[in-house]
Image 1 (cartoon, rainbow over the protein chains, first blue to last red):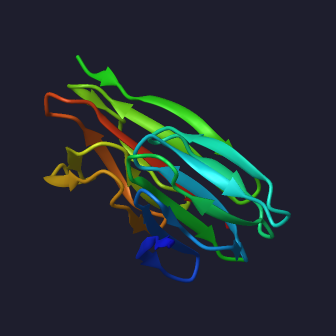
Image 2 (image 1 turned 120 degrees about the horizontal axis):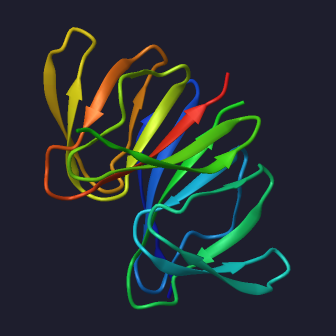
Length: 95
Length: 95
């Protein structure tokens, strides 16, 4: 059984949408495609498991407050295979 | 004596600039004007003292991961009058 991620929109205006995501142990976002360029800001340190569309898996380390940028078009599923919650903000940049 | 804030640019591209700010106890950003709309993402909980251009002071509570949005044109100084560092990301949205 897959546990859903929890999401909470903090800001949504003409320029930007900011969503807080929380993935509990065993949680997954589900496969999705990013329609906008985005910045990720980890809120707590952790490790994400990324599943690419071809099924290949990789790990990504998260450091609290260490942001990164990605272009629209990225497709993946994000899983939490650790024992602590994954919490991050997604800052989507509206065109 | 005023202690300077430390800043570190994490992302700077055509769409966005993300800067991490750290204000130690007694630290201040110095008076500044925001030239771009921006999102603040606190990295750790804390309390900022905001000094407006007219010298009036207010306190703002920061919760880790609780973001907020402001339009360009805001002018202020930001001080740390507490005993713990203030750490936040400033996400500036390029026009």
